[in-house]
Image 1 (cartoon, rainbow, N blue to C red):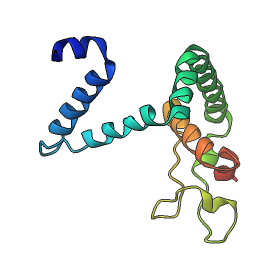
Image 2: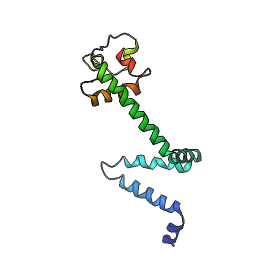
Image 3: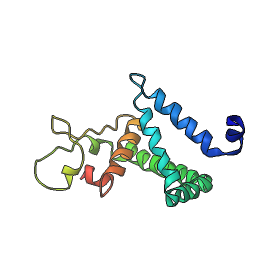
Image 4: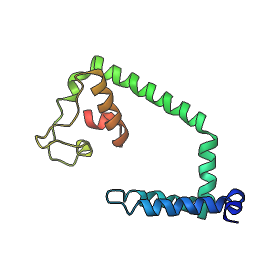
Length: 141
């Protein structure tokens, strides 16, 4: 009867997986498995399930847009590496309430930005470009 119920009803399989995850999270150091149990909200709230379906149905298009974003970000980082590399190290925190206070500052007062190599310039540009309200210009100005 149990095997027949498992083969015909997906809720039984889901509940067995939940029990196994809950039991495995009692192992010391594996408490992060409790966060997986929060995915049950996708089954309980119908709107969230529909949002998940919309994202998964359009995964190819979303992935293409993400790749386009990375290519454009790389072009901006290359431009910065080629022409304005020195501006990445000259900024200091003045302590005033201007735009510069939005970017993270190291204890010495300089921005944690590096443009010595192209990959470092890409990482700095992507980090400050996404976190700053005005983009990389907030950190450079």
